[in-house]
Amino acid sequence: MQPDEVTRQAMALTLQERAELAQRLLLSLDEAPESEIEQLWIEEAERRLDEYRKGAVRAIPAGEVFARLVFSGRS
Image 1 (cartoon, helix red, strand yellow):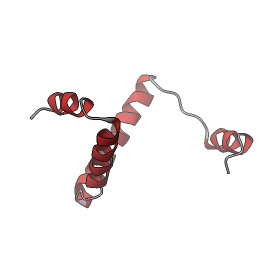
Image 2: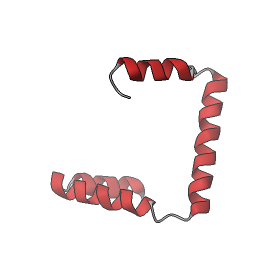
Image 3: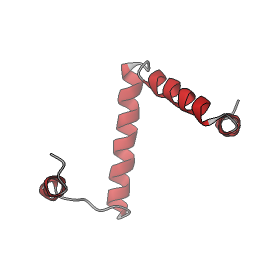
Image 4: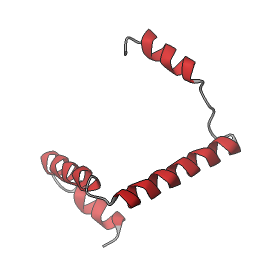
């Protein structure tokens, strides 16, 4: 079954059923082998670096990020 078909079927569920399904799917990610998780993070890091190099996203200095967090009351 293709992801689009699964999504269509899932969207036909009630809100409660979709919430339960989402929880099960999220929990299933914890069961992935460590090597698979590491490979996914490597791919994500490479994707983000590529976007940065292409100018699709901009970097925000860590000091600015932390200042925003403190200013917004999140510490």
